[in-house]
Length: 82
Image (cartoon, rainbow, N blue to C red):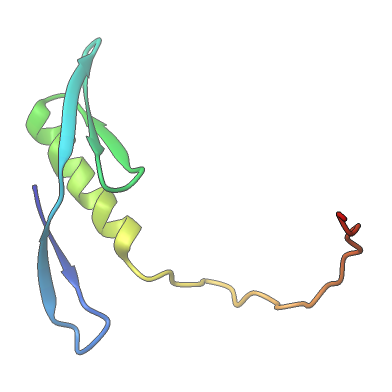
């Protein structure tokens, strides 16, 4: 399976190959990436692989915050193990 994704440097497109396993459960085909914990499904094997490709692209995309998070420092008391 080949995946196209954009590099963070200059927006170049990279092509990467990942390994997928596909099996049928009931009426659905399940496709799972061996390199990441990402899986998808489809009514055909081709649909399952196409959906997995899209899921991997999203998994590898840099996160985009819709709301900026508030960063807060906290302290916790930890017992010493000696």
